[in-house]
Image (tube, helix red, strand yellow):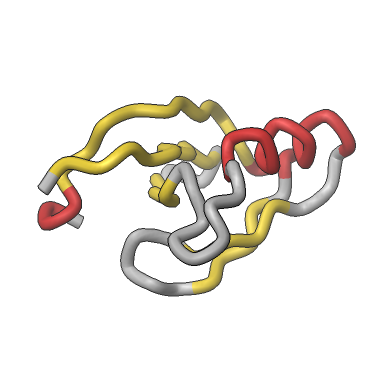
Length: 73
């Protein structure tokens, strides 16, 4: 199953995947990530595996919104 996700590549080499919308509230996580980067604050959300992860903007090498295969994660 393909879903829209945020792919975040970190400087350490880790790549993280988050849903673009909160599954229950529908909150826009892309907007939340942009706001976190602009303000230099941490971004915390559940990744596609259900883990709650926190990413600091200083650790982000790049990010993009794209369609990913959910089962491949």
